[in-house]
Image 1: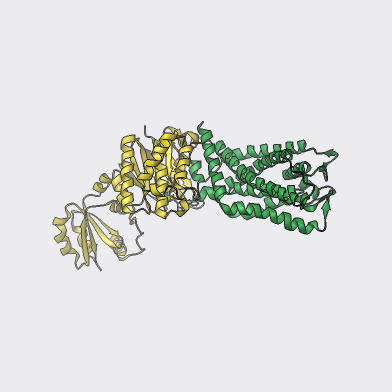
Image 2: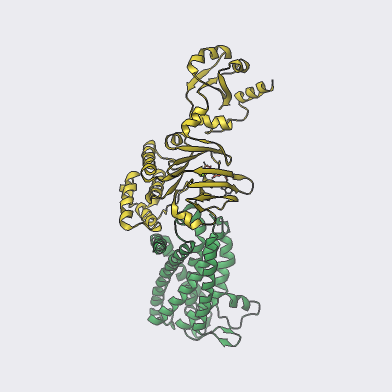
Length: 322
Length: 264
Ligand SMILES: Nc1ncnc2c1ncn2[C@@H]1O[C@H](COP(=O)(O)OP(=O)(O)OP(=O)(O)O)[C@@H](O)[C@H]1O
Ligand SMILES: [Mg+2]
């Protein structure tokens, strides 16, 4: 039985649907990613799962308990690191952690041991007795993480855990998260829009956009499903019809104002492609990333939305009509 | 056991934060002093009630005012708290909502009582230097007043928490001050005796639970002057206390329910 199961989970705000009939199953011990652009509905989904926001319709079970009917039992199985700050600024870092230990009924020796451990992890040991008010943005973020990781819940939700952290801190935290999942069989749900983070950490991930799951799978598989390498072309004008005649090209799409081709074994076909398309400004060959997966399934880039009516898009539309 | 630890955690946090926020402690001393010395002194040069000077007369009212403002603000503060601060952390913790409510009430009551203790010290000094003759500050009168103030505070913190838990943004805050806090204060007999009130005003005053707290404390600290008269009944401090207690119990009931329904 999956440890988390959402059943048509839906959240509507006045004018818009933030989470749209979401059906998800997450297994015990898995690191599961929710990947999507700003406003995709990631945070709203988490807040419903941790019982802080009531769904408009549908429900979910967590560790066998219903989030609507048994919120108290759900809260006993979970921990969360929020996207927005939720530490007390007037208290010190250490005091915030101590309060957390009390709220989660940790025995005092275990509490002190864990506080040491997580302070070390996020490198705040020497600042632990400063008020949070005096911390930098990144330090606050690290404190929030330390706090969320401290009580080792059965299921841990991390909402953009490494947002705004330097690469080194990020690496440390990834390692710790992986260790928790492995050693404690903890289930971890992580939202992010860092493709690299999702790629590295997650056993499986769901790409969501506008409240809906676009595609779900293991990162490796998702990339493999795209079917080979990507060639990215930039030019003022391209002979798209000629490209379409090349049968080994599996997919032609516009990406961020350029044209992307998907094909197996790109390097051996490159010469022929360059011959048929005409004059180009630049070309790039690479293996697919999660960015490409996102682009493939949504037609938009993850980072910034493609500017409306870029030349590549217009050309694609024009050639579709003919 | 775990619930008690959680309640303790909430209480610890509120008390720490209160003691560290110097500005709050200072304003809790300055505001009542302004009332006592300026309003009390200014009006007192022209009026006096029930055989004591005006400053002595309003001292119980100033105690209540401090309790009223600090408790209601404390409660309503959770509307910020749950957006940007510590409350979210508490709301996902494995604690019953009822325990969170209890922890909040204990925290708020402690804040308020600390301020009240400072006011009693000020009262001592002012009585000693002769500004407020006729004020009976003894161990037992202070203890009974504290019981009144604590009971009132619990009810008022609950009102604040009820409002704060149901509000989704802090925009309604001014409205609460104008339509709740000030009326509760002005319509309580804190500043004037409530015998011989105009007919339209009397019902508001008798419906206000704060009236009974002021009446009880005034009887204990000053004596039997200017008693509340409801119909033919002279309210004893005991009866006052029962009314205030009833008010607080009802508010706790509503508050527990409101916390169960609280949204982010
Ligand atoms: N309280 C609210 N009232 C109205 N709309 C809301 C509210 N909270 C969220 N939304 C809307 O719901 C949508 C999903 O928001 P959500 O915070 O879940 O996105 P997200 O995927 O977490 O984005 P981000 O990457 O920016 O954190 C957004 O369009 C947002 O404007
Ligand atoms: Mg978010």
